[in-house]
Length: 117
Image 1 (cartoon, rainbow, N blue to C red):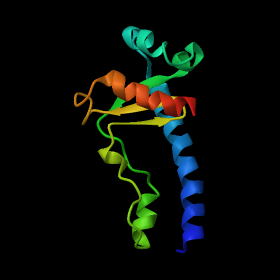
Image 2 (image 1 turned 90 degrees about the vertical axis):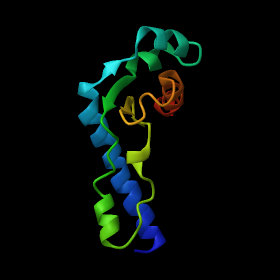
Image 3 (image 1 turned 45 degrees about the vertical axis):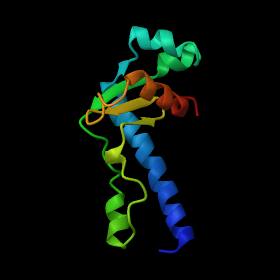
Image 4 (image 1 turned 45 degrees about the horizontal axis):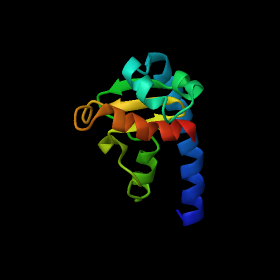
């Protein structure tokens, strides 16, 4: 797979994975907690905070299309299973593997940047 084909593959499959993950996790997510809202209101718009949802997961799963990359001999570009958190549109996943490794508000602040973007 040449570089252009790889980039096209990652864009197409990555976009679908993001949408699928949001649709899967959003119904099982919860709003931000009261103290978190108070802190984050200093930095983010209220509408952004209100639409943001949180879900704790045992670990963040790698995209299913990674198996296709491995099949053609391409190393995975990023191991999501090692991440503390990730944002899919307005739904933030927090890995239970790292939930207590850092203050949750620090992780939420970082992930909220992705919600805004």
